[in-house]
Amino acid sequence: MNKYLILIFFLAFWSYALADDNELANVYYQSGMTLIKDSKFEEAIGKFEKALSYLKEFPQAHFKLGECYEKLNNNKNAIKNYSLCLKQLQEKSGLLKEEEELLNHVIKCLNKLDLSYRELTKAKSDYIAKLTALAGECDRKKYQRLASHICEMILSIEPDNKSAQDLTNKLSKKIPNSKQISKADIEESKKHCNSAMTYYTDKEYDKAIDELSKAIELNPRNVEAYYGRGRNYSAKGDYNKAAADFTQAIKLDPKKAESYNSRGVALYKKGDYAKSISDHTESIKLSPQKGPYYFNRAQAYEKQGNYKSAIEDMETYLKLTPGNIQNASEIKAFIEECKKKLNEKK
Image (cartoon, rainbow, N blue to C red):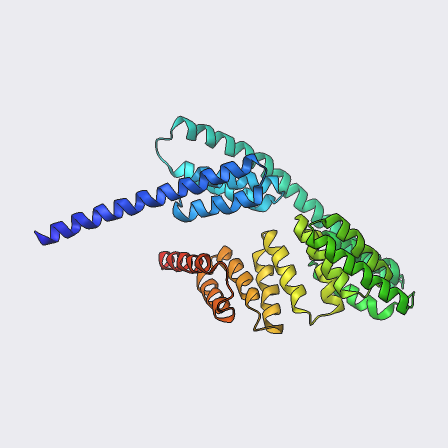
């Protein structure tokens, strides 16, 4: 008799827990819908992902994630979420009328986006390949300045292009400085950086970028100017330009851990989690006691589904920043969520 009572209690509790998860998923979903109306797509993404952490089979949430990523021109993640929405709907039997409409809609979105994404990716790849070949040819014919300019074009499109980075480093040793930087220019460059910091604090990012561009023109070897401009581009959501500036800062000072960390954040925002992890790992090698670097890498690990490493990094973050964490409860919730997902994978 006791065994039956225990079984009944367990089933009742489990049903309650499932209902609670469904309710929470819906709360986060509705919150995301409100943010979409205000065009706050990045914030909405966080809400829809949270909804999916409580309810995995939630095609509507995947569809809205796809819409948000499409609005942010992140076609790769848009396609990924549209595809998950399609898969979940196709696996479901007895679709409601609204679900049938969603199925037709998501197929149209995928047909349109997948084709344009493939075409755009191929066109971009072909263009970069031609530029890379041209830069190499210019270098062989001793047109080093032209080759350097072409490399800059490549890195503005694809900041982590290894061929362009290597050739730029090679050319920097061949090309003599066309301009000796005077002490006056160095000091003036610093003044522009200081002005930019004020604008950055006031969230006037365009003005800050303008000041930092002037600083770079005066002193092209000003690491802080590139780093600062990258931070402002990041704040504006222009992660390609941000990554390009952080790359330049790294070339000028390969030991500056903050540049790797910031480029890792920009790559994370672009959805390139593997390269983000690589940059955060480098920043940790350079500054192993810097807690936020572990925090950032943990988030990238979580996105990749590497929950064990995500937990380890977040726990390290807690150890390195004791008594200095405003969001300790959220961090602990993140760890528990990763543990839950890790157990589900076993």
